[in-house]
Image (cartoon, rainbow, N blue to C red; front, side, top):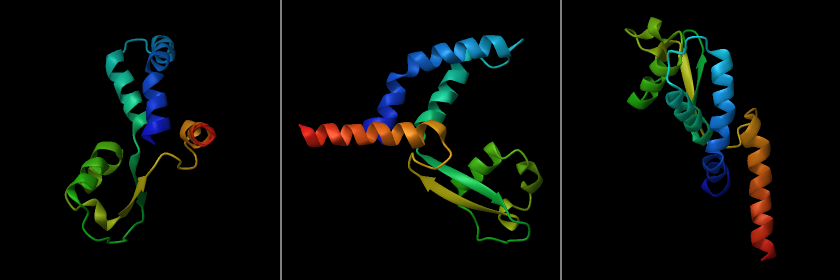
Length: 126
């Protein structure tokens, strides 16, 4: 992951910034979040290899969650406030996903696998 995906996106940061800057200026009439913060959050998302998927399953009554999972739940799930008092375990489950090739991620699935394969082929040929 570090060899191909993360190194590639780190090197592409100036290009990502240019594209994001054009979009940012055309879409935001009165931006409330500084561009630098948007760029950093975008890069963080591109470089992230561990994700937690939350799935609502009413009355599932799952085992108690670790604190870091609860923190992400309340930070990223828009309906999370309803479960602040009782805990999300009663109606939600979570799955921890590790890696960069989760199907559906437009760049990491295809681009990452292609670049990774090219690096392996290059290494094999040397």
